[in-house]
Length: 414
Image 1: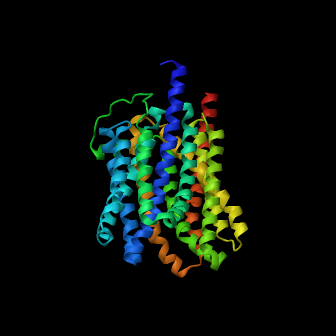
Image 2: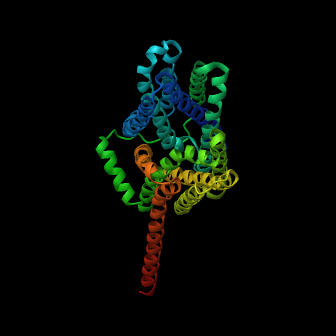
Image 3: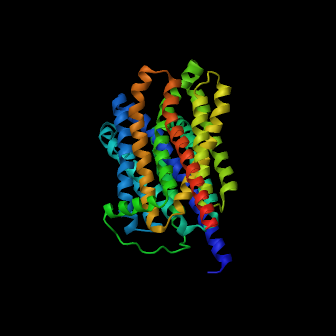
């Protein structure tokens, strides 16, 4: 394949992937809001809504354990297309089954949606290097992060508009169409760099190999640890958003929360675009530093945001939290994709496991704190965890750099 043809194929693939991911993410956030509301509407029980969300998170955890086995056996576009069709079929019974019987189905649908969403993300992120040229991966990851943030806001906003236009049935029909459209965009993908067929090892062997790989890349291992701590902070501010919105304006708390999420998404879009322009073609150490700086900016900005009592100040700070989030996400995914092919799949499975377990555990942990502590103190505590890890990492990197420099000087003298 000539360089010109290779570039054209890579450009075509990245456009298809970006559009497919944008539609898929829009559908994921659309059904997250709509189905959660639908469960509560059917049951009139907050416990039922909590069980629904727990089933969705549990599906993501199972996906992180199954992802390696699935994508070792089935590679390329076929499993991604299947996952889109699978998610569409999961929602189909909600169009035909009487509402009196749907409440029993919804936990299984939630589990399947969580499973499908996470498997799709694992498969797409781990296999992106076979479809997109190396010098376009950071830019592609930046666009995927940008459309993910945009999909979160549009999905949340459109769920209300579709509800007003045609009720829950309209939302479910549109959601099914989004997944089918994403499948249609994945189908034309062309493999640019054929992957080497990997042996289907036992899951324990895959994890042992990953552990050995992370020992050889200690900074990447620290990035994963910081990601775990960051999910606890994410859980804290997600639970805290309604509280902050009510504190800012009790009469318009829903509108305030919408503004906060929209400006956060705008900041994440800008941060991802900035990362694309600054990190393209950079070495791994540059990606690692960008991740650490992004997390630092995000956590500090969230801490300051939740200290505010005026909307304009909260919006002024939360946009920086979004920018840090965008930079950190692009840097982390791009850094993970630079690992050898044999490690990418278990690495992204582990990353999904970290996000699901951390966020789920965080949602459970923050509740008791909110019942006895003020909002500002809870946010400082949980976002202080990744910041503490960042300070430790910065000291460790400084010590390691000085040690390496001294060793080089000693060798130069001898």
